[in-house]
Image 1 (tube, rainbow, N blue to C red):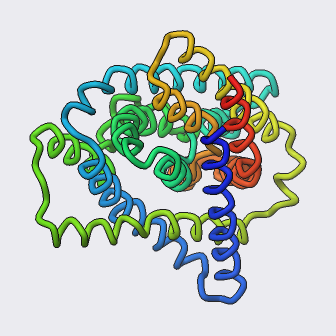
Image 2: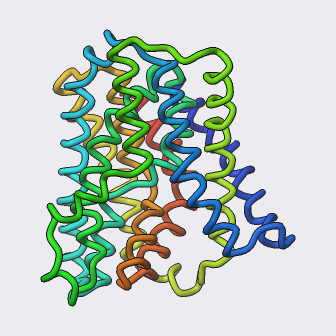
Length: 314
């Protein structure tokens, strides 16, 4: 029951900050361009710094060796289930073409960077960031291979491959992850002043990410998306049923309790913002991704506490 109250408290805070983002747009303190620049700042600088700083200050070499196998295998299992789920839902609703492919990607990948990391830091402050660093290795490999491939329009598919997309994995977030793992394994420490400075920058990740999400809501065509039944199946299947299924399987195999909580919460994340960015860049169906992000992000304020409550009863 403790995890339920922690999740509920975190999401109450998230809701307030999301509304601040909405207010920022309404008062013209923010606009579409500043949101775009804010997203780049978070993804290319602040988030990698936060991953690096939290990881090296929250784990030891013993920790990483102790949990590496369980976290990586649990993450692969989770993504396997989500990939299959997206495929089944796409077939169930007869979604074809670019819309169906982007819908599949939106079902498979969750918003770990903007919502998952802040939430995990709230409920697992000691080793949550270590688990996240290991999780992100698998997450980024799959995102830049399968995820990117699914957002390619039909006419570009024959000129692309999963392996070719992997070159994009060399990004700031992965650099932060690999540097953190090296520092932990070598047991290196940063000078005190540098450590505090990086911590101050990294702590900006949560509020800025949630302000960004709130701001993007103001540019969504709510009427266009709110009547699409397939988005609500993502909520019921992907954000409630799948986390409970993953939770039960990991418990059956006696995975460490903290890792079970970690993977279960990430399985229930709303759709990933990066999928909309990929779809826009590849000139695919960006609207499908935006609709999934908007609907699932709103409902995650209710589904994540529900998941925490139900799993606390088992």
